[in-house]
Structure formats: C-alpha cells, structure tokens
Image 1 (cartoon, rainbow, N blue to C red):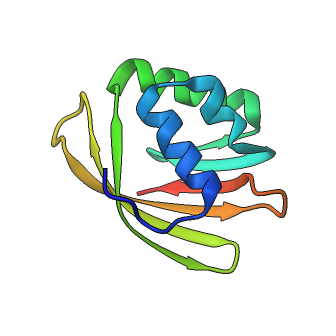
Image 2 (tube, rainbow, N blue to C red):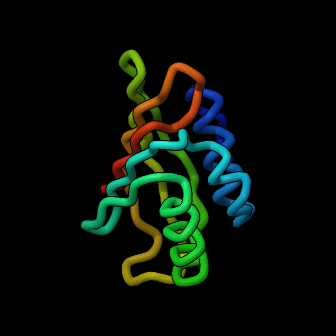
Length: 110
C-alpha cells in the first residue's frame, strides 16, 4: 500500500480495517461517534462495534487509501475498497471528523 499523508488516527483505522480487528477499529472512535454508511446512521461505540462486526462478516473488505485532503478537523480520504460485494473493487470517499483527543468523531462513507 502506498503511503499517503493522513492523520494518524485514520492510518490506524485503515490498518485495523485491513486486519479485520474489530477491537482496534472501535478504539479509533470517540465515545459519541456518529457514522453514516449505506443509508444508516450509527451512533456510539456499541453501535459502531455492531456495524463493523456485521460489515466485516458480510463484505470482508480491504481498503487502500489513494489520496487524502484535510481542512481543520475534517479529512477526506478516497480509497479503493475490495471485498465480497457487487462492483468490487470500488472507489469510495470517507469523510472523517476528528475530535480534539485524536479520535474519529464522525464518519460518512459514500
């Protein structure tokens, strides 16, 4: 995977995603995190854990970040996502909001 310049918490998130390490993924999020994915809103760490467990079991995705932009506490990552889904691989955009303690506060996947 080519190195791109992105905030450290996001590097941890993608590494954990590719390792399918649910505990490490959840550790990247703030307690009050809000995620938008597949038309759903996921709020809080327990819900984030359930979302990642279900998505990992269903899609078994790997993510290759391709480019990153950052403005303040917002980061947008374009990534090639491969897995068990129609149209794989696909380029998706991850829009992250980071908290002051370097956790993922918000995430929108589109």
